Each structure stands twice: as C-alpha cells, then as structure tokens.
Length: 473
Image (cartoon, helix red, strand yellow):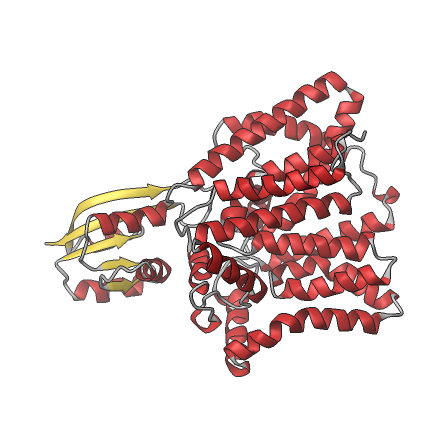
C-alpha cells in the first residue's frame, strides 16, 4: 500500500528529522576509552599514539575533522555524522529490501530503524560504527540488488575500498558478494581497479601522514594485540557458553531493547509484541524459496556472524553486532506485516504498543546518555573535590584521567603483583579506582567508599566502578 505523500518529500523530511534529532541528543562528555581516542584524534591524528588505534579509520576522521573545524564542538560533530549515517542507513536498507518510504511497510521499517535504541545511542557516540554501517549497507545494495549493471558494481567495489578506511571490521559482511562477483564477472579487472581506487584514495594520505614503517609497526602490534592480547576473542576468551549468552544478549537486549534479567520491567511491554511479530516472521520463512538475492544476504550475515562470534570482543562490547541489528528489524517488520494482514485489529494494537514501548525505551536511554556516565562522573568528582593525592587504578582509567588534565601522581595496577610496590611507597593518602581496596587495608584505613554506576544498556564499558579513599595507618 503506497501513500499519497511523495517519496521525495518524505526523504527530505527524513533527512532533517534524522539530523536534528541526533543533534538534540548530543553528548558532551567522553564516556569510555575508545571514545577518548577518537576525540583526541580530532586534535592530533596519530595511530602511533592510539589516536585512534589502528586501523586509524582515516575516512571517518577526515570527515569528523572537517566538521569539527566548522562546529568547534565534539558532541555536535559526532552527532551530525550519526544523523547523516542513520539517514543513509535507512535509505539503503529500504532499497536493499525493495521497500518504498511512502508505503505503510516502508514507514514501519523506517520507524523501527529510526527509534532503535542501539542505533540512536551509537549515532551520538564518539565512534565510527554507525558511519561504517551505512557505508556497508550501501555496498551491499550495489553488490546485490544492482549487480546486473557494471556501473553499479563498480560503485559497490569502490565503496568496499572506502569501508576499509571507515570500519575495517565490517568488511567480512561483504566477503561473499565480493568474492562471488570476482569469480563470476568477466570484468573483474575493472572491479579490482575500482576497489583499489577506493582504498588508495585514503591509504596514500594515511601513509604520507604516518609513514610506511611506522604504519606497519602499528598495524602489526594492534593486529596481534586484537587477537591475542586485548581479550574478548575466542582465542583469549574461549568459554563458549559465555560467548553464546553474550551474543544473544547483545542482539536481543542491547540491540533490540528486549527484556533481560536485571533490566527494567518496562522492556517487557516491548518484548511481548516483539516476540509475537518475530514468531509470525520466522514460521513463514522457507530457505528453499529464497531468491539468489536473498541467499547472498543470508550468506553475508552468516559470514559476519561467524567473524564476530570468533574474533570480536562481544563479551564486553555489544557494538560489534550492529550490522546484524538492521536485518533483525527487517524480520520484525515482515512479522508486523503478516500479523496485520492475518489479524488486523490485534496486529494494529500490538504494532502501536510496540512503537510506543520502543519510543519509551529509547527515550529513557538517550536521556540517561546525555548525563555523565560512571567514569566521567568520577573525573568530575576528583576535579570538584580538588583531590591531589595519588590515584591507583588500571592503566586505561589512569590514561583517561590523565588526558582530561588531572596532574595527580598515578600508579598502574594490572594484576596483584603491582599492589605491593605501591604499598611500599607508603604514601599518606591514596585514591583507589577499582575493586582492590581490601588488599591495601593492612597498611591503610578506609575513609571513603562509593560506587559510581550507569545503565549498562547505554554503554557496557565500566558501567560500575568502585572508588575508595585511604589514609595510611
């Protein structure tokens, strides 16, 4: 069913709504260590200093730097990118699944994408993920739905090259259609050229700024660290049931806003209709009836799922499942359409409840997101109380505080072996950030103890941090 409002007018309206809504919910604090690295890169782009970490995201940083020069505000800069990225994501998701914006099904899908809590939060984060996702879905559109025209295929391969400089870890989603066209298409040399041009357009200035030798060292160190040192992959955290539970929680609770143990009862109002519509969608799926276009999409999703499950930090960082969320929303939208046709009154009531509950969950999370989170509140508290004595914490928290201008003496604790050397120094007072105050009580008296907290469904990193103040006995 197509509506009387023109598709063009709706697209213009959607553009401004995406942009203005994200600007209105901008955040003006740095909420985690990854966001800090991207914020620092606006002042000095240097992967050797992990500003940001390798692969550097030079396309994203280039655009962010240009906007920051105009806006002079980090929060507004990243929200503008988030709003534009969401707009592109919605448009190409509709194209990928042959939905028109001025149809009921297209408007429902658009509403689900626009109001999705995870996409909204990520559109305000100081991160490249949503921009990478919009480029990724645009690539998928050109590689699958427009694959019968060489011109569109060339655009698709060019955008894959651009994606490598925007969000490299999303490239596995495109591996299947990329390989398929290289194998099947007789013009593969043109495709290779287009892909290479997409890479070189950002790689040449990247190498010129960093230097080839330095870039190689950074790439090698960060790649090895990603798989073996930093944690979160199947190599370092290979407890399978933890990974399975984490990826289900990431998709269902973090990504779609569904209920999970310990979460607000309000999410049950969203969970009920959502489960109902997913049921109607899944029972009608028949793999044998899928078209080649649909099989390529399913194969791409499976490839990315395997990549994320094995080689990404899904235990501590839910954002890695972002490319899967849009496709679950498509499934949800299919279920809504079938339920409304099958049982119009019940389907319409549950659709209304779903959208209202989704709006409520997203509104709560985005409102909380605009307030300083746990680590930012600790930093503000140290500044307000003018705490001058030494700070003892893990290296990443100490790095965060140092980069915010705190000039206290800092001691890093990575494991138990680092505690005794700090105690031997016999400092009069210590501020401990982390859960290891008990190991200092043989030398010190606890004078203050508090826990800083933020909603983990807003950001899982450091959602609960204990702070203790100690005085020497």
